[in-house]
Each structure stands twice: as structure tokens, then as C-alpha cells.
Length: 141
Image 1: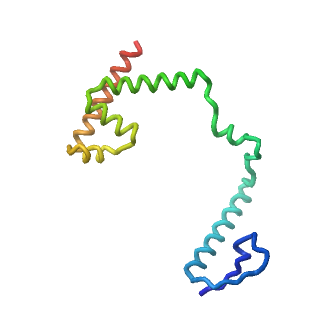
Image 2: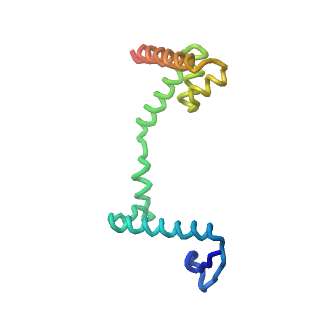
Image 3: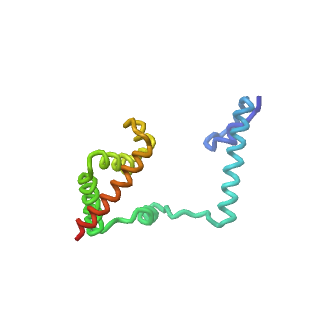
């Protein structure tokens, strides 16, 4: 058992409180303290001890750029064209492409769910992508 002072770990503690804790917990607490101190040292050495977040929204504006109305419209039209291309595909190809690229399901999981080989899924998706490419080329002309 290790004896620690809670005042060292909790800054809101105003007086000393000594507590016996298991050695495993003490090891984890001391390791966390070492990692925090190492982080502080790295920040100081690399002169990165500042923040853009002053409460005036500059950090939010830097990270999240607002799109112009034309950009929003262009994204919406692109999305509509992609969905139109997917619906123009044969049913299986469209469902497989939607499941893989939109829902993020892996090809092996799709194969398992449909009870077919992964090779068939790969062929179907690649053929579907080629069909979508020709559809979108014809659509834009």
C-alpha cells in the first residue's frame, strides 16, 4: 500500500488528506503526473504555450470556414448527381456501392451478409463505379 496526499492530486483540496491506496493505483497516478509534466515541458521548449481560443471565436473561425452560398449549392448538386448515378445502376451494384462508400461497410462484411464471395463483391463494385463514371460523363454533356 502506498500513502499519498490528495492535496497533491486535487488542487481544490485546501488541507492535507493522507490516504492509503493500492500500489497499482499509485503507479497509475504517478505515471499520469509524469506524462502531464512531460507534456508541459514539451510545450514550453517548443514555445507552444499559447492558445488561439481567447473566447472571441477566432479558433472556431479558423477551424470551421463558412461556405459561400455557391459552394453549398455546388455540393448539393454534386450529391444529387452521385445519388442519381447510384440509382441508375443495377440494384445489386447500387446497394453494394452505397453500403461500402456511404455507410462504410467493408467488402468482406457485405459478402458475408449477402452470402457470396468477396471477389464477387469487389467485381460488382468496380463494375458499378465504371458504370457510374460513364453515367456522370453523359450527364455533364
